[in-house]
Image (cartoon, rainbow, N blue to C red):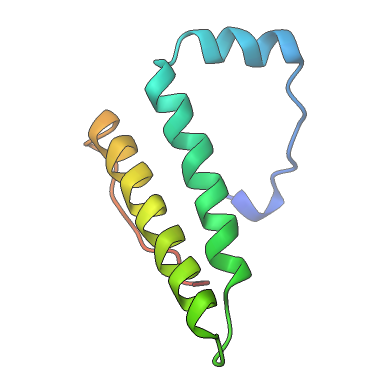
Length: 87
């Protein structure tokens, strides 16, 4: 049994983060960044009454998120894919 809800995030020193980042291919780092930005954009456009432009922007963000997730999934094919229930 794990107590993941009890874990406290610990800040990583910049030098350690740079060392970790240097071990990860650049296109994977870019995909992680793109996925995070796209997920933030998708969350911005929530609600039952979106205008036409907002719907188009949400669809664009969803497509960018899917593209980034596809790159990340190809890098780690053994990881299970679970949809986020908060969307």
